[in-house]
Structures are given as C-alpha cells and as structure tokens.
Length: 530
Image 1: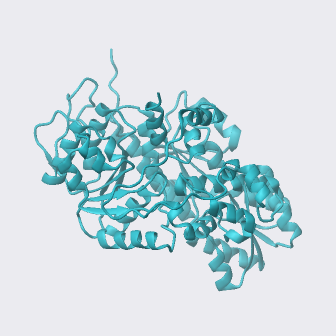
Image 2: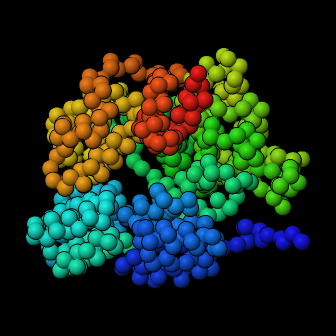
Image 3: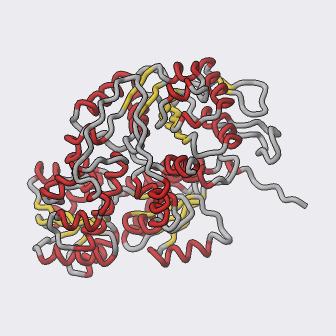
C-alpha cells in the first residue's frame, strides 16, 4: 500500500548548523528563537569530520539547508550536495566586536577567512584604532596569521571561531566576530531557502543551484567611470517605475547585480526571484515559471504549485538569458506583462499578479527578432526601459577600486606596480566575473606564500598564467549606445574549449571559471561545437 507523503509546506524546514568552538555556544543561544519555524540540529564538528558525519546522517535523515561560518562554510560548500547559507558579519557586527576588543587592549588583530569581513578602514581612521588584518584559507594559514600578529605585538584578536581558538592557545584573548544578529540573519535566509527548495516540481539539480542564490548578499555597484555612473543613474531613475527593464551586457558584467539594485531601490515589498531561462528544459521551465494545477500532468503535486511569477507577486522577477526562452513560452510571458495575470499549466482561471519583470540577455535580441526566434511584440514590451552595462575593458579606470574591494585592501598594498599594470593590460573577456576569479586565486596563493608583501609581476604570472597571454589590451570597442545590441563575448575555438575542459578534469563549472564566463554560456558554446 502506497504511503501518503506529508505536504512539504506543512513540514518545518530541517536546518543543520555546523560549528566548532565558541560559535557553537552562540548558535545554541539563538536556536530556541526559531524552534517554532524550523527543526534546527547542531553538528558540532568541522571540515572533513563534518562532511563524513553529514554524509552518514543524510542516509537516514532529511536536511534542507546547512548553516556554517568562515573557513568551515567554505570547506563544506565545495563538498556537500546540500544548500549552504553562510553566517556573515556586517559592519555593525564588526563595530561591536572591535568595541569589545578595545575594552581589552588597544592593539587589535582581525583574522578572518578570505573575503569574510567588510572593510574596516573607516573604523580604524575614525576611532584611531591600531588594527592589523590577516586573512586565511586553511587552518595552517590561520596558525601563521596568529603567530605573525603575536610577533607584531598584537594584544587581542577579533575573528572567526577557529581564529580566536588559535589566538587563545597562543595566549591572546579572543573576541568572536559574529553576533547573535549574524546568526539570526543566517537562520532567516536558511528558512526562506528551504521553503524555496520545497517548491520545485522536480528534483532538478539546476533548479537547486538556482535556488541557492536566495541567500546571496547584495553587493555594491562599484566604479566612477562615466559608463558605470550612467548605469547607477538609470537604476535610480527607473527603479520607482513599474515598467519592465531590459538589461544588456557581456557575460560577467553584473546584469543580475543591476537587477538586484533595481529591486532594492524600487520600494516593492515582495521578493526578488531569479531564473535562468537557458539552464532549464522547456517543459520544466513552463511549470517553474507559471506553476501548475492539480492533475495537470502525471506526477503533479496535490493541490498544484505556484510558479515563480506568482512567487514574485508584489516584487521583482529577474529572467536571465531571456533570449533562450522558447517561442511558445514567450507568448505566455507576454500575456503576463500585458494582462497582469498568470494562468497555471492545466488551469482554467487566471491569477492576478503585480510583478515587475527585469530581463537580461547576452544575445542581441534584435538579431533574434529578425531571425524569427524571438517575438517582436515581447521584445518591445521588455525593452520599455533599457540599461546597458559597459564591459570592464571600457572602464579600466574602475579596476583599482574593484581590486581593492575584492581584496579588502588598497590595490597598491596587494599588487606591485608592474603587476597592477598587467591587470590593466588584460582584455578581461570575462569582465568582472573573471576579475573576481583571478583575485580569489591570488588570495589563495598569497596566503600560502605567507610573505605578506605585494604580489610581484613574477608571482602574478606564475599564479595566473592567462594574464600573460595578452600583455597589451586590444583597442577598446566603441561604447554601446542605449538601445543597441550588447556585444557578444568572444568565443574561443573548439580546441581551446576542449583544453579548458581538460584542465578542469571535465568539470564544466570549473571550466567556465577558467574561461571567465557563465556555465550557461559554456553550455551553449559546447552545444554549438562541430
């Protein structure tokens, strides 16, 4: 006899917290506040031990989302097939931690996992604090950081759980960087993510990866170049209006980031919901976007399910790679935009929605329209308002600010003049995404080198050899006028694609990172290979 499964919406999300040291106590203090909304289970282990324990427990228990922090979170994210929400410190957390540390001693060291803390330069300047900041990747890096700070006369350490444990082992008092509010924010994000993951109609790994982006933190839109200033001005101008916005730009320029800023500045109280139209099959895309009614197809969930259009009611729906949407679904999307209502698959009565659509495309939609692959009426409806993001090669004056933001230090402190000049000479076909990947790799190598000095040109080329392939940047392409098709990313030859896959051991996500492009772009290029 077939057993009836409970409705997922009626089941509390299962959230496992993974922590060691002092963070475990903080998690235990906050957990009771969420008992009514989630089943929160502590796993007081770290790194490989945590991975082994979670793998064994998943065979007999359900886990929707893992919550972890710092280096533990980075380690687990790469090794678990369960969505992970990191506990992240913001400026207020840092300010409180520094204030507690200042009451202990004036000379303060901050030790964090790479990229795990907001910039504190303004705290140092405003309050006259003597602060030394160190970043680590591995546990051994963290030990070196603590030893270096102790040798430099640092008297108290602010940091992650691992960092302050090591500090206290070295005889230095430690102050945990994370606060109860840090944990509350992570729990709220984990509950929302678990609910999102409970909704997909099929356990498609692409959808699970897409859903993990719910936990994403909004990032600044950096730069003072005329092109990026114009982008910010258009965001401010367009955000309050309900019209659809078409965001154009090459791969890696930050189209979803612009969409996030449009939503944040719009004053809309609903959610920001994102979907990549090129990463899902047509049948699944229809159900994902528009939802379905009970009995619409074999295996349809009892009571049906709302689609992302309904989920974004009162908020914003971001449709990336809109040029990949099949023609049949374009017709249905046009109806949503014109009638402000959505008809679920298999339903007879539409549902009214108030949703602001933001679309983005790598492809020149005008060419798609001319070729009959994209509806002309939908194109004009989407392009009511238009924002085009300049490629990085056209705004190289922003490069130093971007590097400083990604490193968390002024560019001149982490890169020798010759190395910084080489970054300016690179063509950046993958734009800011490629720059972010390069900086991440440099951070790892720099931490391993543990010399503390600026990265030399020799080190730069040894750690990122692709930067030596175009010592002189190509002539800048003309700026893209508003309303014109965005230039396409330059596709390498078939042999170069095969080599990238070989270097990544067949891992397409890693190959895309090496090429500085999105997974969807790589998938499309491979599909078009002879």
